[in-house]
Image 1 (cartoon, rainbow, N blue to C red):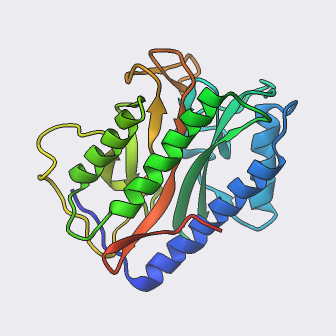
Image 2: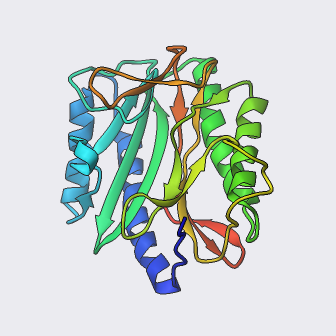
Length: 252
């Protein structure tokens, strides 16, 4: 495993790309409403980036057909935009990547469509809170496996489970690089494996399911749901390790 250490000027390039993601997510969170189709929501995000001369990095990545992953209700991640109409009470995951001058950004949110149930509010809060908890505890010298275990412990402490077989990742001049960062302790002891160092840039993305962890990929070969078929939530930030702590790059 080769985890690159970024120089300050490279981190600023990654910050620029990541900020563009955050701005797009903020725009969508403010403007997506019940009655829109997932394709219309994708087109909104695509146009927002295009109007600023920014390339949506997911479009065509591994064959993905859109600019925005639109993961509705039980879809945890990688939702393909379709003609499905979002309605009051739905929850919608939005995951966006950008590329600016050869550097990449990536982030995701799960948003309510209008008024949602208390149970769905708590489900979304678990993904968001576990992400910010992870960012807050990162220290130089901590092992990635310790971080994965901390995310898992937080999610389980709220009564949920992390999706398995999908994970956070490094990012830089490619959208996905080493290391892989599961939201659970995959194997071995937490006090083993690579350590977090200053200059590392990576994406953390808790994927929270209600009862069962195993993923099922739907017939379109992209949408990922849990075996339990229940609603799920997902949050993601791109972070850089600077002066021994994690700093969020994907914020407005």
